[in-house]
Amino acid sequence: MNIRRSIQSKIEEVLFKNKVIIIYGARRTGKTTLVKAILENFKDETRYINCENLVNKEVLETQNIEQLKAFLGNYKLIVLDEAQNINRIGHVLKLLVDTYPEIQIIATGSSSFDLANQTGEPLVGRSRSFLLYPLSIQEITTEYDLLFVQSKLENYLRFGLMPPVFGLSEQEAIEELNQIASHYLYKDILAFDGVKQSSLVQNLLKALALQLGSEVSYRELGELVSTSHQTVARYIDLLEKCHIIFTLSSLSRNPRNEIKQGKKIYFYDLGIRNTLIQNYNILELRTDVGALWENFCILERMKLLQSRKQFYNQYFWRSSTQKEIDYIEEYDGILHTFEFKWSTRKHPEQPKLFAESYPQSTYDIINRENYWKYLI
Image (cartoon, rainbow, N blue to C red):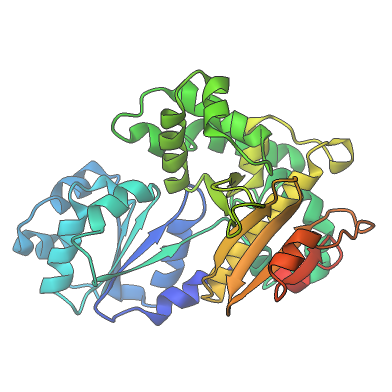
């Protein structure tokens, strides 16, 4: 079953407003399915173009506007799928939107660092960008009820929510995740100029997977994978831009009592993370349940905020005496803090130092019984 993606309506709201629409996202998150669902509403007025096709690529790389228009035809809405394959795509899109503002162009890209670098300056003021995550539990509840989500919650922590994996049996999910990791996970980053060491990228990702939920040191990671901390920082930046991982920075406004410039790293999909370390065990047999739940909750919260068009500062917090808060959102001048506990029997209190330093802050514990209040 195709689940309607929450950003579809957001994209449809900005169609035909003289803006190029750019959809980013990791491979296999459903960008092609999404744009084809949008095209369904316009039937014969649309054209879908796969930019990985060499013939399409060659034609679209021309700067001759008459040739471009002749190739695109008299369509109202045109999708350029995997548009990062087109050299100087930003200039091509600028040329089209400036010359033919009545045509709506949607461009998708799996490697956002490549597409963003090519579209950033040429399309200033001429584009709207959207990030497509893996499926969210909010999206799933549009087709299934909350009881269904609750019954599958453990599976989501084990196999993630990539669209091709959703609804598969355990063995099928493992096979699909292994295929994604083998054929898609490194494709974009290794295609980037200057990234040649595939084994280094793989080892770094495995090290990050094993440190899930913990504060990371680039210098220590460099020692683990036998490279410099500068190289680690560069590769982590590229992995972020490929939407494989994301980082959370520490909140530090009291230098005497709080850590400075700390970072935690999480994965955009837990199935991918578990594939890297080849651990699909049931939760009862795992030692990383807390880290999985923390990653899951932060990620689902990010998806929910995006669907609501709410953009907050996000942090974690740790004191010099090792007291911690998993996740913080800052909005309306208030710090809203969250602790994630898979166990429903644990009810930790907000650290005293934090409560004293930020007396207006809020504090909530999210567990597997009340998560829907915060994530759906």
